[in-house]
Amino acid sequence: MTDTTQANPDDQSDLRLVERTLAGEQRAFELLVVKYQRRIERLIGRMVRDSDIVEDIAQETFIRAYRALHQFRGDAQFYTWLYRIAVNTAKKTLSDMKRNPTISESALRSRDDDDENSTNLMELTSEETPETVLAAKEVAQAVNAAMEDLPEDLRQAVTLREIDGLSYEAIAEAMDCPIGTVRSRIFRAREAISARVKPLLEKRTGKRW
Figure 1 (cartoon, helix red, strand yellow):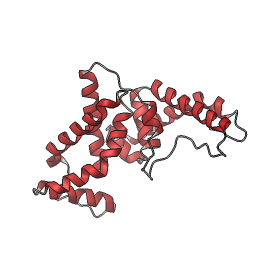
Figure 2: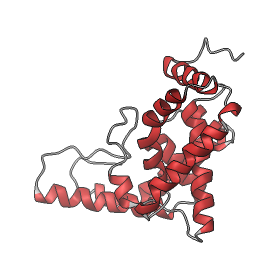
Figure 3: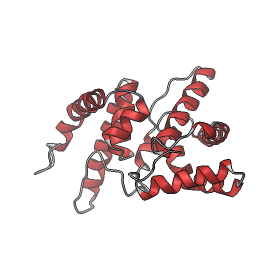
Figure 4: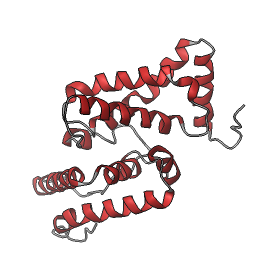
């Protein structure tokens, strides 16, 4: 039996829901879906432009997760495990449709709706005026363009860190690579985004990347 004494309460709660589901309590899995559906849909929304298929991919993700639930042992966060399934499902769907994954501007704008653990790539905190609104829009567009141009591995790493707020350890688990590789990818991604955004930020007094 997996030792969960060092896991945080949320991880333990997820593991209990998994165990209850495997014991035949379907309501327990429904609670997991309710808990993570919006995060998974936002994740998928950052990989595809067509918002019409986001919900379908998310639904397929949870179906696959349910079928593979017996493989979850609690040695990683449930969201990390679910994230892998969502990414693979989205990639397969896009491959089948012969489309390339890319971040969508609408998903980027709504990325932090209800995730208290997530962090913004930047914070533009000033009194809202037509000028500042325009400046913020220009910066958001620059970030979006920079994210689109990143190689997929860099985009995934910086998204998990800056938008989903995962730890380096959790990102390493999700991407199945060493923590050092994660740090390198995030550093390179930030450098690329900074190069695109810094000129815009420097127009605003006292604002720097």
